[in-house]
Image (cartoon, rainbow, N blue to C red; front, side, top):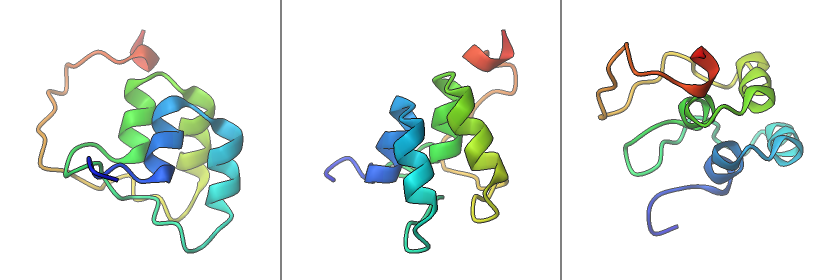
Length: 83
């Protein structure tokens, strides 16, 4: 992908829960690859308010919840899940 978005990232970003679930079953899928050094799939799912996807990702032991990226995000940045 030209912008660095993997198929897994796009599925998480768009909230495609069934596809994310299937992809999580494949150990070859890297669940932590950020889009061009930006947000991780978990973070983008949170930002877009995709709660079912967020729950799946948080349950997956391969998802690194502490993964950081080059983009600094203010702690006070509201998300759809914080409302």
